[in-house]
Image 1: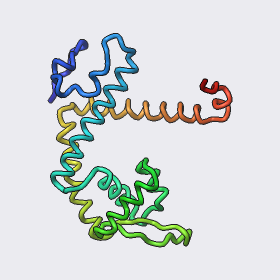
Image 2: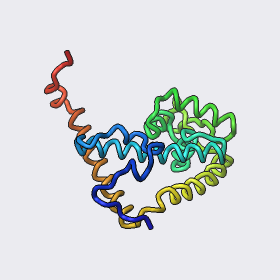
Image 3: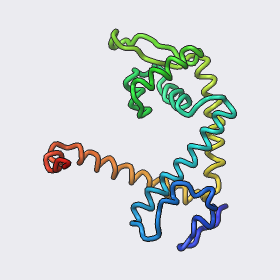
Amino acid sequence: MAARAPKNFRLVESLGEQHIGLEARAQADDHLDTKIWLRLLACSTQIEQQIRQRLRTRFDTTLPRFDTLAQLDRHPEGLRMNVLSRYLMVTGGNVTGLTDQLVKEGLVERIEDPEDRRSWRVRLTDKGRADFATMAQEHEVWLSELLGGLPAGSKDALYEHLGLLRVHLAQRQTELDSPVSKTKRKPAA
């Protein structure tokens, strides 16, 4: 179990300069919101780098390919390309390129969309489902290893707080996207 850090915890002293990463941008007198953003970014980047490395080493694959297979695994009937693009938060061109590669390897297939004959759905093949199941199982073990040093209560609290943050950010985005908000913004000079 990881020890609780004291309030005046010095991250650079704990991590060393070789591991401080994005958080090195923060200064002691920076606003707390800036420090939180940089810490979230640093944690996300650090986890992502380790997952990318393990996927490459163990399965000779990339995180975007893994994410594509994961989304398709959650939707056995397949997804339209534009929906898959939104789920992955990438452009349609990126999804098309990934899909082309995965089709060539026999992991996914394109099928006619029964609701719209002009559209295609992408779904996992039996081989894709089996390969992804193996990767997903190890991926879960990796995440457990990476986050295993945190006490369960801290994980629960972190999950809850990040959920509150997501809701807050979505509400702010809705406000920014509203027609009223757009009329209040002044044009850039």
